[in-house]
Length: 111
Image (cartoon, rainbow, N blue to C red; front, side):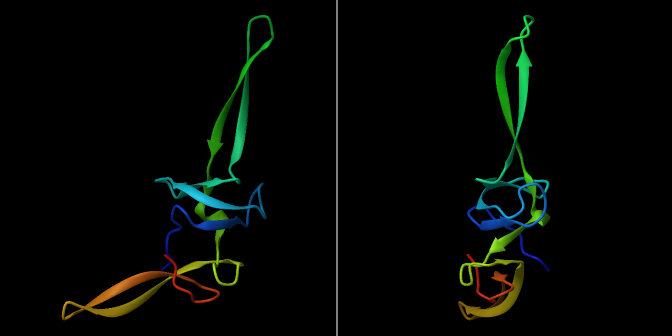
């Protein structure tokens, strides 16, 4: 099972036009795409008037698919996949199964 990348995670683009760039996830969209601050591709569309003059530039965010990024491991500072660790915790006299996000390279538990 692979854990989802969340807002606030530091990621590095591993595939696509912006490969090698790092940034912070600011939004996770419903279709498994991410808006990453400092990395997102911006599409520019120029609108012209009847006289052929430029009327303005309209910018639109082009989100990156989650499969094109890797999480930056806070311990090693290297890109890593995110996994899920399952452990049992005793709470209020009951044993509860807890799933946590883990950086696969270092095994460090993530927020």
